Length: 405
Image (cartoon, rainbow, N blue to C red; front, side):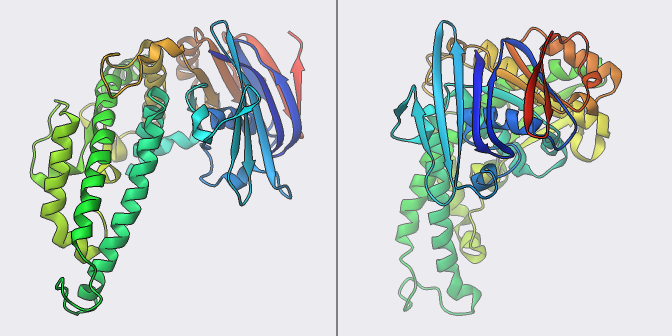
């Protein structure tokens, strides 16, 4: 898989740009603030419908404009697909596939798959759990695009249930009666309905995340070992809020969706008084985390800056390996199909080499050189290792110029 063409209109700093890309290495080189990252951000947006830099799509539209258009041509084997995304300010985005409108924007997810590593990824090691949850959720969508709908439905149900909990807990927090027959008190039987919906959706998300972590673990250890030259063992594990809620031991076994659903229902029943009192959902995938350990110690708080960079990089490289080699069993109904059918993803390294010492830089170059397509951004040509020979584009003042070989 590779991107053969990228066209932008009113995206970030670009009024208009059209680029022909090639398989192998494509390097965008230029001083900071000239628009290099905007190019790879656009490609990542086509793959995930999200930016690795901002949460609000409006920031992607050039100042003073009401819409931006991102067009890519994606080649998989002997087939080419053209994806057009229209990002609108104040109204719904739209998408076209091979010039034809699609019913839902998310219907184009999965046609292009990317694995992007950027300076912001240091938050995977040093930051809060929400960054690690997003890492797992983005990866599960790349593995099986249908899970985007499951995640969206879970977020909707979570908001509804949280609103009901806040309403139910209001009288108690104000010191009034909370009996079901109290005037103005909500019917808590409605909460049972939302519990059931949350358990069904949450169980599938947890099960997929756990399978991903089991599949990722050996790739993470291998990638960290190769990037750092054997400086400690990198391990990952899934930490579920169910374990604490139900006093369950952490285990490497991955339970079934039905078992997780039953556990979620039991946990919500146990925690209902606390949830009503606090007005929040205390158990579910939105409360889970990915634990990272290095040499047996928590990476967060113990790993040096260089070790943290290497661990974050290992997580992305492991994702690339997992997507390239395939996930799980094609007969597993959690996956739509074995990911090997879709080809290896496009690998994006956004301003990465400047953050690494010479040895780590060369080890990373050796790891990514065989990839089908690698997109690199760098402030100066010297930041790109000489072994990564390919196409180079100079980026200055919003102008992108291909440099002759």
